[in-house]
Image 1 (cartoon, helix red, strand yellow):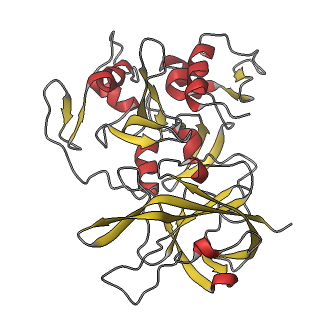
Image 2 (cartoon, one colour; image 1 turned 120 degrees about the vertical axis):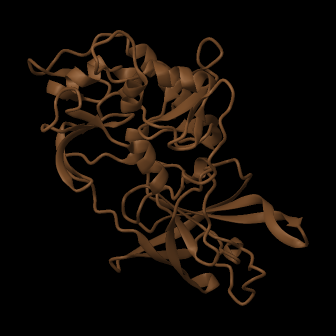
Length: 370
C-alpha cells in the first residue's frame, strides 16, 4: 500500500512526541520505526538540536565513510548526515553534511545562476544572492545549533544547521509526485505543506533518504548504462547521464538518450529512467532524434541496455501509456526492476514556426526478461 508523503511527514511529527523504544545499550536510543539506534556524541547532538523534526529517524548505523576525501564516522538520518570530526571542540565536533548543495549538484542544477535582488520584509543573503521570506524565514530562524550558551538562536547558529539559501522559493515535484513550494539551502530543503494543521507549515525535506546512504553491508556497485538497443526500430544509441535543471525540469540531451542519474542502474532492482527527443533540431537536421520511432515499438519487443562495464541487460516491452507532463510518478522508484522510457507524443505546440513541444508524454515500460 502506498502512503502519501504528506501523510507520512505529518505522522512523523506526531511520533516525535512519543518516547523512544527501549535502548538496546546503556548509551543508545533506538527507534522501532527504522530499527537503528543513536548513541554517544551523535545522540547528544541529535537531541540537543531539534531531534526528529530536524533530522528524522536514523536510517543507517554509525559507520565509516569517505566524505570529501576524509575517512569519517558518520550516521545517516532521513533529513541529513551527521559527521564526527574528533579534532574539533564540541559542538563543532559533530557536523552536518551539505546535502542540499550536494543534491543540487548531483541533479546538474547550478544554484549560482540567476541571483535575486533584496526584497522588502525578507532576509537577503549577499553571499548567495537569495532572499528568505515569510514562513521559510521563520522556520530558518527557529532551527540552529546551540553554540554560544545564550538563550535563543543567533544567525550564526541558524547557519550552522540550515546553511545559506541556494535558491529562491520555487515550485517542484517531490518524490510523492506532487508539486510543492520549496527552497533549497546548503544543508536542507524547506517545503511548504498546505495539508498540515493550521492551514499549512514548513517541513524539512528527506534529503538523507533521497541522497542515498551507504549501509555497512555496502551498496551494490552502481554502473551507469552506456547504450540502448531496440532492434525492431534499428535503434542503437549512446546514453548520457543527466539530471534536472534549477527549476526541477528534466535536462534532455539534444541528440543522445538521457539517463536520469537519480534513477537506478541496470541490475539494481529499481526503475531505470531514460528520456529523449522525438523531433530533429533545426540547427542539426541531419542528426536523427533517438526516440523518433519509440511509439512504433510493440508490446513484447526486446530491448537491451549495455552498461559501462560491457554487461548486457535484456528487457521486454510490457506497455505504453499516454500521460500529461505533470504525471511524474512514472520516473519515481517503483519497487522493482524496470526500464521507463519517456518521449513526447500528441498534438504539436508550435512557436515561431517551429515545433517546441507536444501535448503528452509517451511512457514506454520494459521489464526484465525472465
